[in-house]
Length: 87
Image 1 (cartoon, rainbow, N blue to C red):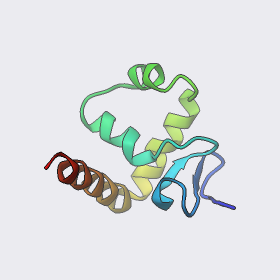
Image 2 (image 1 turned 120 degrees about the vertical axis):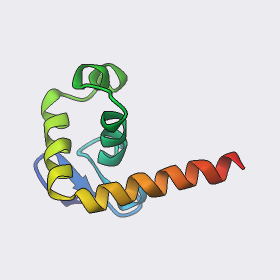
Image 3 (image 1 turned 45 degrees about the vertical axis):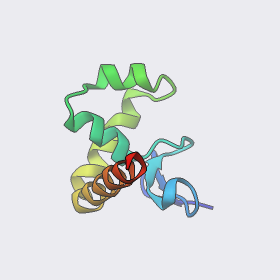
């Protein structure tokens, strides 16, 4: 069973590498933050992920504000993993 971080953010071992995700989805907070850092706004993200609600995004941004180092590290690891696969 996963650890509930907020009513919308959970961390579950063996699901998305244990990264913080939107509860009930396999959508990591780091992926949403990564898109936001690239310029995507909430409306675009809700189009990309139609099962999410605006409150899910608000929870992701709040989680990032309180756990910036963790999420930034996950973004770096994902970027490195993608580069390694391309080689």
